[in-house]
Amino acid sequence: MSRELEKALETWANSKKEGHEQFIKLFEQWGRDFDKKIQEIEKLNNQFLKGVQGNLDYMNKWFSKKENQFSKLFRIFGE
Image (cartoon, rainbow, N blue to C red; front, top):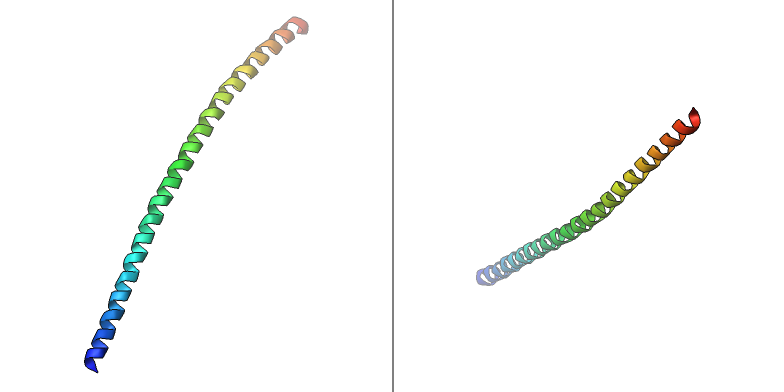
């Protein structure tokens, strides 16, 4: 009986160890996949910010030009 119990406990321990190892492998894979997704999001974010920055520069120049034009108009017609 004790040999059967020992065998059953050994089988149970091995099964538990395999389960832990499988969980660790899955968790490590999840971590790698998560890091990859974060890198993809950062890349998209940087591309978006570059595009927005270019548009902001254009808009700032456009508004500055319009501000100068209105300033001239007010000087001409304000007198």
